Amino acid sequence: NVLKVIELFAGIGAQRQGLKEANINHDVVAISEIDKYAIKVYEKLHGETPNLGNIAKIEKLPKADLWTYSFPCTDISISGRMLGFDKGSNTQSSLLWEVQRLLEVSNTYNELPKYLLMENVRNVVSKRFKSNFEEWLLFLEGLGYKNFYHILNSKDSNIPQNIQTAFMLS
Image 1 (cartoon, rainbow, N blue to C red):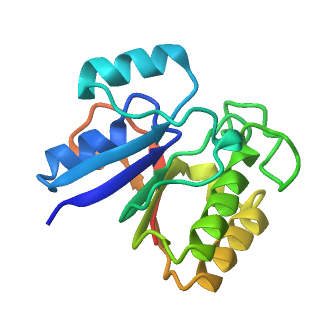
Image 2 (image 1 turned 180 degrees about the horizontal axis):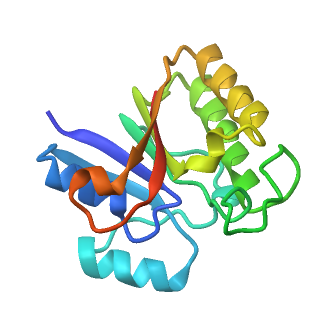
């Protein structure tokens, strides 16, 4: 059985690489990425993959079992601008709400993915942004997802960095 995957905010394909390293049989049916340098690296690492481009211009995603969405951390990272990700704020981090729109579209076609995987900076669940994160959790729960999130530290995986990252599986 092959897991059909869509990588939103694909970057260089870190989630795809994780699936490879975990020996999960998968097929990335599409990505959404606009950074030309990230796209070049993605293609070098993983080969040509259909790129749907700017998430705000995608009308409907192909059917898939798993969507990954590492939405921009620019406005929630403590080393970033800290402008937040309020819905309608037009910050880069508010692109998360485009995922909401696409999930709503998929729901109307009865094509919701079985699984969602979010990755972002630890600050996404901080006191400052907790209300936005809780709004996101409630939305997903309304679609029938159960959400499990945890902060992982790279140093605990024998990686010579001390970076805390939020992961959520829905």
